[in-house]
Structures are given as structure tokens and as C-alpha cells.
Amino acid sequence: MKVILLQDVSKVGKKDAVVDVSDGYARNFLVARGLAVPFTDGAKKVLEKQQADRAAKQEELKEKALEVQKKLENIKLVFHEKVGSEGRMCSTISTKHVVETLRNQYDISVDKKKFEEKTPISAFGITKYHVELFKGVIGEITVQVLPKETK
Image (cartoon, rainbow, N blue to C red; front, top):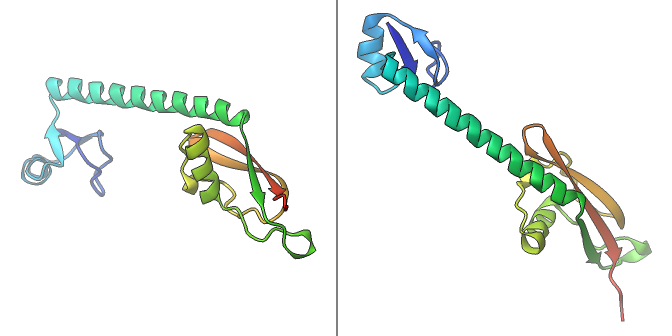
């Protein structure tokens, strides 16, 4: 019997796959537990519509990520930090600080877990962070750290 899987099923197939299984297994286990539906013309049309909707949603997310990537090209985040002994920074700037500054100043939301380099900035100068905005779309964030003016 052919069924369309509604979820990933171990040793059977992935979600939305059309698989051929024995009649008893399909009726008594897969369909009974809500893991699959029988393969019919109606179910096939619903599956195709869901896949088209998901593809459109993914394309929309990719377009948004490309827009954010273009915005990030023109942004330079500037931090002013205290100067410690021997002209070094007293503190560090983590990816969390970068994410918060982007959100507060530019209304751009990025996930701090998607940064390729996670080491905090501990020296004055310019640093470039790369962040994955979407699968295959990498944004570059420029961060400049300057010494804080003392009066």
C-alpha cells in the first residue's frame, strides 16, 4: 500500500515521502498513529500544494536574507572602550554585544549562534565578523573598536 509520510519514520522514510509498505503496517501502525495518510489523488494534490508553499516560504526567507546582507555591507559598528595598562582594552566585545547593537541601532536581527567566528574582540581596530543569514547567504559585519576619550 502506498502512503504519504506526515513525519520522519525510522527505517521507512522522511516526511512527505511517498513509500510503499505492507497493508497491515500502513493501516495498523502508520495511519493509526497519524504518521501517514493513504496515497490518493486528493492527498497527492495537498502534498504538492504544501511543498509549493514551503518552497515559496524558503524563497521569501532567502530574499530577506539577501536584503539584510546588502544592509550589513554599509554598516560599521563603532564601540568605544576604556584603555587599560599598556594601551590595551579593559574589556572584550562579544558576538552578543554585536547582535544587541545591530538590533537596537539598525533594527536588524541576526542569530548569535550563526556567527562563523565566535571569538570576542579584545583589541582596538577593525574586525570583520561573518554570519550565516540563510543557507548559502553570508553577511559581513564590520566592527571598529576605538579607545574611549578621557577628560
